[in-house]
Image (cartoon, rainbow, N blue to C red):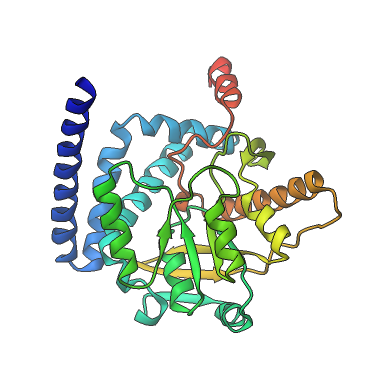
Length: 308
């Protein structure tokens, strides 16, 4: 009985939250995109440091940039809140953030054209850079058939709103069930469809590889899929430009090894992925998603014991 009551109350809460989300989308969509972006940045910069997540940001920055002064890290923390807030308020405008609309500069776009014409699937990877939602928009805008993986929202009604909004301009999102190497990804690639994954967050049970001076457990699914299907591991990045504009770069594929030693080849591939992500983070640290415990608990415990 209590379970049913809890389920009923939870459903009401979810519906109210979804209604509030719809109202927010409605309001933000009626503000010019540049204004909405700037407003989101100001709100997040004001409120972000007041949340518990701000402590995670600062600890992550300590681990990643021990050579920085406290003042430098504090500024970087504020800057990353600005980027996160801007990205949030840009979400209702994602249909405008496709290369064809003129707000996104595409570097090495001919590579996407090659992928489209080849008919062979690739494994796109990226990290949570700038407004990372721009990357799937660029892939779809180029005509590449691709399944975009994402973490489903806890609220199923909000999650449906997100998926429906993306579907209206061609971005098909799905949250893979299970863990590394889900069945959905395998089936998509068997059909000749490319897949896109974010490969920069902690994955318990993943492969440990260096990242920003610390060992970081990373999902091996992208490397595993690329090796299994003989597909390119294709990295892309998003960079924020002034006035809610962006630059998407299609990088050269990450070269993998296929020696026949599954463990060694996966470890090598994950290490290459982490090295690529690290290079991008160091180039534009304020545009990465620092609100996430990227490293093992031992790294944070050591930081606390050091008193830093």
